[in-house]
Amino acid sequence: MATALEKYYGMKESMNAAIAQGKLPVEHLLAHQEVLYRINVLETCMNFCKTAPVTPDMRVLTYHYQLTDAFIQCMLLERRLGPAGDEGVKTKRDTAFANMQNVVASCRKKFSSFAPNNPDAYRNALGGMINTILPAWMAYRNTYVNL
Image 1: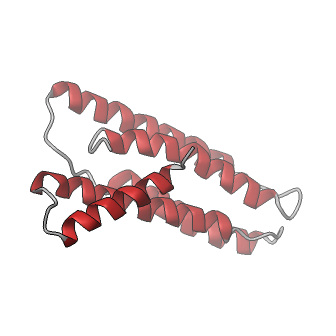
Image 2: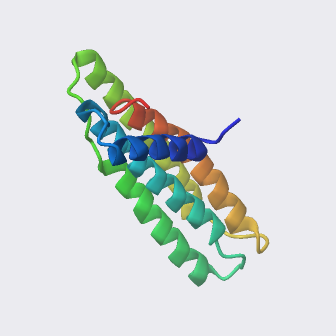
């Protein structure tokens, strides 16, 4: 089964081929932008996991976490772009946004008192956090542009 990132790479290739031939319908431009955005977010999160320090040195861990947390905070606020919706769509967006906020707040709370018990602890905890946040983020994004 393909990962979400692989699925988005395939969509990007298909859309880019249509663009190169001048055959991407205008109504698909928003979906193309969304695919590019999602690839960027998923690759960035993957890179945060891959670069997570393997050390108990809290200064190093704190800096990496601050970068990761800043990016996640941006995920909550950016790209509120999509077709206008009726009240039902607005309610779904609000619910998905509130859910994502709760997931992020819960993860932030766990990291507020993080103390590594071994060198791999931070890398493992960060991977778990990102794997918890991304499904909520994708559900939220799907309320704007459902790919």
